[in-house]
Amino acid sequence: MSLVLAFIGNRWGQMIAVALAAYFFGFYSVPRVDVPAIVRNAEAGRDAHWQAVLRQKERENDERVAAALAAAETESDTPADMAERVRLCRQSPTCREHGG
Image (cartoon, rainbow, N blue to C red):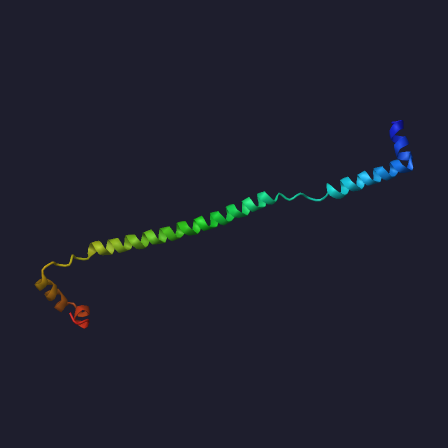
């Protein structure tokens, strides 16, 4: 204890104590920022967002394809016989409009 009092009682000891205090309070009071963790979190958030967007687009596309397949199954097949195709074209107003 007397050594500490002798150190603090001395002018050089006081200056060293002030310098050490300034160093520790100055540098260790600054909050540390973990930049790699911030970057990882930002990338994970960005990736999660775009994965959700891609899943939504994939669902929309699957619904569109399923609707097209369902519509294709309800349509009758085109006959291979030319006479039957001509007869069907005469019955259809859209075919007659295009010069069938």
